[in-house]
Image (cartoon, rainbow over the protein chains, first blue to last red):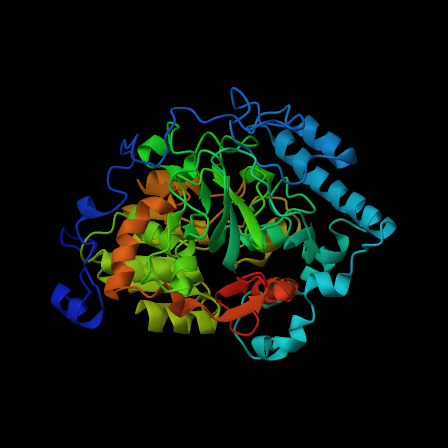
Length: 172
Length: 382
């Protein structure tokens, strides 16, 4: 037991486990596992045929964290910052990732972005549709009642708040 | 092309977008044949991840066919069927050169703390993801690999994230022969972690969750003992009793930021965004593991604060190992296991939907309807 030197052993033997569990022990030796030696130097074997990649052209001033020395050679170009949310995002990147201001500003900008996008959507003939976008119809198609009724689920207590969040985060 | 786009917390829709362009000489454009919804996509869906922009496309688990290649691509050709790891990696930075492809330093302009991930907000680099008909794949010579002729496409899409991450979660536990391993979370990652723990010689594997159908899967797919934590007042005490008051040798957190088990923690994190994640599962790991044991964390958390019982971790002398999985490092071993029949990742797939059904798919997954464990998305252009 735990109060003496021997480890309490309530577990089956290796032979019993090998007989019951397909593949038991095939990766038993930790030195034979793929992640053995956490940082295994393999430069030249990764597929890269460059020491430093070619730089991707910057078609707009790309926002970046100040914890990088320069803009990374390759970067994503989805949804460039725009409008007020974009201005807040650009401002947020003046703070390092170690500062709460960085993340709180980005979280705030996300909410402003949603408001701006819903207004733009409404004005440009692509309004948001709460019913279809929330996927609420799956409650009827995917056994919403049966999935919850008399099931011991810890999440049922707070699932009632999901529509509240959908409607109030942000409040438009 | 048609693509899923984010419209705000709990709201997504399908829109027409331009087919991605080649933006760098080593890009490829891949036509997606299978994508999947991940549990971590729900953090984006719920509005928890900073810098998630309206109009962005999620989806970091996908396979497809190469449609176009940039001028410097050497290993892939148009028409190749490929698996694409969820990590975007350059192959040449400090981290990639040491096989830490998940921590690439050359692909995420927005955050040095995170590598590049498809479809996972600007915090993960601002790349659109694969819940679409086409996707831009940077560094095509480094990440993707050709789909072996013998491999089932459903197994292949499971190999882009879920299966390697689960296996990695077990490996991070430093499991030795006979160890008692507790896996928190019976979602796809937890199921693969539990199954993999046996491959590494575990003597006992216990899976903890609150969803009965997932616990049944843990028994049938992962041969695990199961505990429904909603039936018990004190999970930690229960696990101590089950291990003769020693504690588990290894605890694996396969739950992450939206852990259930404490109503206040859930509301404060997931609903009100006052912290980056509910720490319930992580704290159960710290408390239930034995002194000098190992806690493996592959559940995803956000970049802000999460209230973790670090004092207990320190006083117990724990080893805490964590990272995003560097997927391509694990492919050779996992390919062997699938080809030999030891692993069948496709067995955990429960639902198959089209891109047009994706909003309902997310709601189903978020609300855990219809015994949902893993949902595959098949875009029409496939």
